[in-house]
Image (cartoon, rainbow, N blue to C red; front, side, top):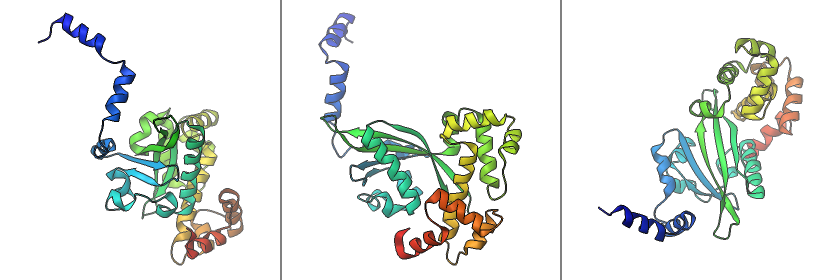
Length: 264
């Protein structure tokens, strides 16, 4: 066993920590995908994209979550090839911001719907990837189911209860006052907590859930706009159309036509 003097001499002759890390990383073989570690974390999905927004790395949880059998099935594809257009555009906007600013974008809340029409939230963190010259060459990210990420991502447990209530009852009328009373916060406190957690007000959060549900419903075969409006709790089709146009930038009818023509 080396003496204390020998260990101290060895420490002094070692490179600086930053140089040590740099040399170590440069020697790692491309055949050693470090992101494979995420395959051992059941609640986390890792991905990386290049400057053309194409998937270049994906952990097992990432490709399996979206129904692909292996990593090779998603490599080289972009979000518009993998997801509905309204989701892909949201992903692309976040990606563009990270790549343009070179700054991470954390605690991004994204909403998906199960085959049973139940909203399922994910928390995503995106960070820029840089080449050896320090230039942004893409981004990497990790996504986690909201239920698993709620503790670190949500600043107050009441917000988690509010989200659960919204997820279960978004098709009916939900007032901020009723929601606040249910989770034992004042409307002002609830508003502040939602802004801290999601950068969205409670009202905007509820509307986002409804609009994503509307998109899913309109994509169903034989979907009728009036029936979708009724199922989502709107008093009539015109009110639904106005809300949809305001938040999605198009009408329900145009959205349906775009999807059926292959644009979704």
